[in-house]
Image (cartoon, rainbow, N blue to C red; front, side):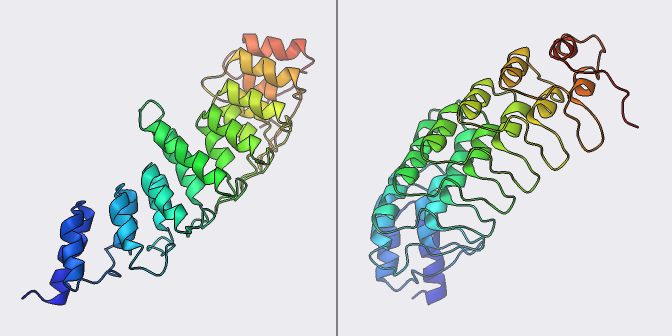
Length: 283
């Protein structure tokens, strides 16, 4: 007869491999349902992240806590959100999982859902992951929770060009000008990433076009410093009141950025037409 520890190891392995009936048999034989893996995860975490809704439902009849934490402070709902497993996310939420639970990085399942959506934009699975974000928002997830870097889900959506996600967050109360620990707003990130549609959506939502990050750079600074700068985005920022003479903490103006490669760059000329004043580069 197997030792209890061996039995539990077999149970963990069966659960991780999705062999529900084997795992259930081992549990019935005395395996420890509270056992932990190498990273502090329980079988409930593994089953949630692996999309095993039947296993999740069964485990929740045996466990007292749906929001059990792994070694990083993540809950099973974090695992489901990060792995775009909407079926298990629904089961967990139906059993009272907290959509606002934060891990050790102060990230909620919604942070994970938005970031996962960004990594699979061209993949058919993206729809499922973005559905989880919708689900979490519908279930009351706080769209303005900041992680340990001061970033909200809107920052992630803006940085990664997720237009529909950004609009979803804004429609559900996302604060448009939240600054991260680096002073970055969603508009800084969208402008730097050359995501025109998100820049437009943020400006329409009232984003402060001249807000500066900790280095004193405006969204226009950040865009002009990008290797993918576009006239359409410069036009959009200018039409919404971007300061053509804004200078960062080093004294570097937006015109310095525009003319860095070529003093007669078309974007530099555009800024001059809007009143930008030439000045010496700061030392």
